[in-house]
Length: 359
Image (tube, rainbow, N blue to C red; front, side, top):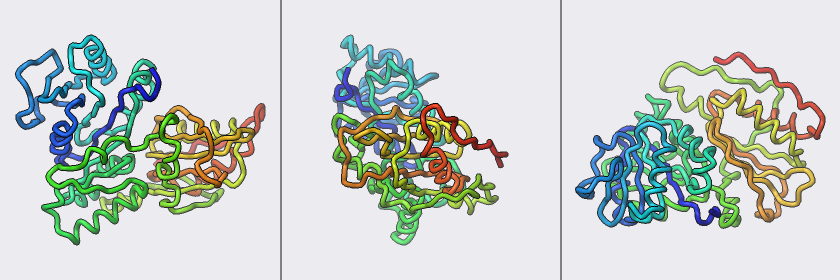
């Protein structure tokens, strides 16, 4: 199955009570040929859409939607759902939405989608959408690091309950979200109503169709630039809820000269091996030594997406461009690490970066 035939999957995240299910209700009315996978199915109400006929963990919804309870591992649930589709036991859904629990870390779900070969051949991650409560969002970001992490990994942020929020408080929250995740568009969802086009087709890199959107997908110009500094180190986490935002840093790094393939892979391996808990999200378009077209890569925490190669450069800029969102990690440390590995060549041991004591 080619990437263009794979079923797109959207991960719908958001903190407790932020309106994920309300948004979902609206979406499955607008796009009925949608499969929905969620945790704790019995505690989630999808209005009056559920039909009486149940097929094990599957529930047929009005208009041909399917709802699946994820009990245990996600992979078997997705595989069973796909096989039921192939056998005609459920409607031929065209897309899937995975709704996480309110305090869920998105990374393990992304890990399943990207590293299970059987699933990767049949499903394609389309994007991560995070709902943020316009009324309680500021309080949740202050109190719960999980809420910050959900915002940091998102491709798009849905601001819910905007009809209940005062203008001044909403403006402060939106400014804060732009600092935490500069490249994620913020879209208001009044009473859960949002255009389906705002949820699906978010531009997670697809070499068959998304080449013209690479610059927008990367969002390099929206991040504060940082240069290398040999003294950069892991930061000690500050105490107190008010310091949560200070632990999150969003920044860009530019390398003027091409980076060797072995250097690129060694630097990424070092980051993931020693710093994965600090690495919330990164994207990059990289000029690799000896290659005519750039490589595109991105990841969430320890989950590295398979590297892909563009057919051509998206613009006249041939520099390697990286964007990062990290926690408790100095941007200069990351810049120095990339610079140290940039000149590594095949057969040459890469620079040694000692594993530091963690806070």
